[in-house]
Image (cartoon, rainbow, N blue to C red):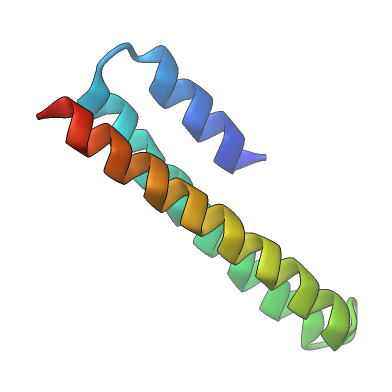
Length: 77
């Protein structure tokens, strides 16, 4: 839940630089999610195939965040 909340907060701050900063924070939160998946798989709370599926989605969201950040940076110039 932190990723979308960070995006919303950044958008609500009003300025492109603040929005970019919160996109970076959202990306950090996404990295935390990735870590939680590894931790959940280790003792068997989720299967390897479930972990792989979630990690693929995490990577896709990461690519979207990168694209959004780059777009904002281009437009902020």
